[in-house]
Each structure stands twice: as C-alpha cells, then as structure tokens.
Length: 94
Image (cartoon, rainbow, N blue to C red; front, side):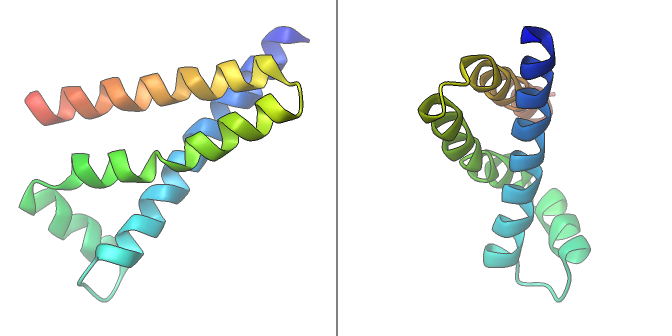
C-alpha cells in the first residue's frame, strides 16, 4: 500500500508540474497557441524558467497530502519535484 501511495504521489506531482507549465505558458506566452508559446520559449532559452514556475503547483499538492495525513503521497510529490528540478538542471546546463 505504501509503494502504491508513493507512485500516486509521483504521478500527481508530474501532472501538477505539466499543468503548471501549461498555465504558465498561457499567462506569459505571447503566441496564439500553447505549442507556439512552447516553441518560442525553447528558442528563447526560457523553457527551464517556465518549467520551474510551473512546478509551484507541486507545493499545493504536497501540503494537501500532508494535511490529509497521506505522508507517502506527499513523499511521492517531493520525489517528482526533485525529478523535475534535476531534469531542469540537465536541460539548462547541457
């Protein structure tokens, strides 16, 4: 049961990061569609900044799971956040 909760937390964390990225692209994107905004962000070198801003939604999911006494799921969200941070660092510096 504990491993299942951690996996659920990881999935929630990755989905929250993806949804946060989409919301960030909608707010800060100057293009007409999300795909065009994403392409502009990649060409402009600001994709990693937008991904980092999108990961803020993980904070809400983390504290929601903590308030519900679901520590294993909160741990999964934390793992997903660390994964997104490492991926962002790799993309930024490689």
